[in-house]
Image (cartoon, rainbow, N blue to C red):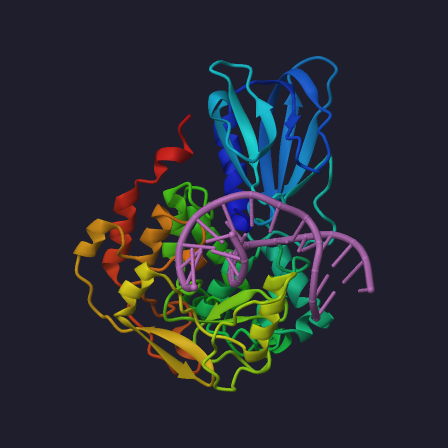
Length: 427
DNA sequence: CGTCCACGTCTAC
DNA sequence: TAGACCTGGACGG
């Protein structure tokens, strides 16, 4: 659950679930986890939390005696999350556990299947990380605009957006959404993009009122770095938490670009998939135009196959998602794969969708995500279509691909199928 | 069964 | 700028 909305939602969750509750005893760590033990034990204490970007601080406050307030700073890695359960329902991969004193006894757990997450007892917010895009917006903005000479901004904007020194809280799904909504090609160099934002701020030519209006109607890319995470927070639930809840399908359903059929994707220079529409921009990894249909190679290497294969693919550069799977194939009937400059794009063709499928959960990619899988890449059914970015409509170059219209029914369906509140606030 | 992919850092060549 | 660190779901054979 790891971009800033998820971390923030985790803090909200903790404060809601732990309010008025007393915890007791020692903090328990799983055997397998390599992070440090938490040397805190107390007959009675309370728990609260705050977040900043991609970090979460959990505060343990003793209610009596000579115990000291202790806090723990978490980073969630790729799969960390926080949940509260009855002791009898301890989740798998619960690596750090805090037990309630009250009965039925419950346990607040840091769950992290992949164990990329970390925690630091009495640690500070990581010093190299910038201000939180959600909660320290003004400082975040200033930090970026005052440091445009940093070589980080020599890079493509899509890569700069993942730099936590400037964009603390932005992760892979948010960057695609931000770029999409600001109609910025992902592989444009970051500096000019941000300098344009700066000039707009400084420009005197326009009356303030006009500027405000423009901002409101078409937020710039830095504003989107804060607005979009807030939108996700406002979806409620816990955000990106695969598998377990309907929250995940709601998040995917919210996305207009990330893993959305019809959108293109490329691996950036760090091997991370960036989703976009239209022109990739000048700094796109080389080899995107050979026109080779891009067959996935069979990996034959003995070791580190995944890497090796990735590399080969990078040479030919990909593609826009062509998801495979039988479920998807079914949907593929309605989708045609085209090719543009060597980049394949998947173009939704179906314009109308009737209700029904709906009933059967296979209707939308999001729906299937909710039901079965935890990973977008594994989702196949796709009826999803994207929507024209509202924010900045006019400004950008016309896209080569038609922007499909969104089906209004999809949302309804998903919402309906899920009543997601179920899990997140109950005991 | 093997391969690929996933919300992110980290650190070693 | 590669790997390393991990688990697990989906898919293809």
